[in-house]
Length: 196
Image 1 (tube, helix red, strand yellow):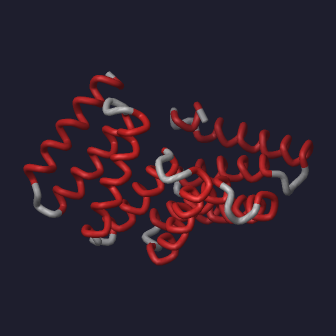
Image 2 (spheres, rainbow, N blue to C red):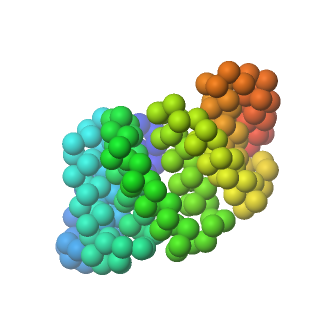
């Protein structure tokens, strides 16, 4: 994960592949840890634009998670979200939307309405709607996501700054420049304070 964050994709891939091999060898091909390793590798491939390889890995992880944990487990929602974000990156919006909606439903059911994973899921769905120009549908989702983050993480958390920024981008796209500017300034202030 560290190497991936630094853009050292080759080194990250080797370690992810080793982790996957060990998990399969020690736990079997259908263990939830194998699904997690597949998800991690899929995220790496997606970051590199290797969409076909990433899609196969997300689908395998989803299948294992459903088989081992049931259809309503948060790990299933993680795989659904990953696959949906991959589709969104490829502008396959009609395929992405139901997956994001399922993930949100699972997170709410398993973790409650006020969990950070719910906030992230709301944000992801809002981004999808925004990408399609469905601004009226995106706005309340962004606002709900922001409210959850503020409630759980406080007003000065980087995820709150990111939520302010996302809402600002939406307002800017709609021509609401004054509202967008205020949110951009808040996001900038928090980011400087928390991240330097």
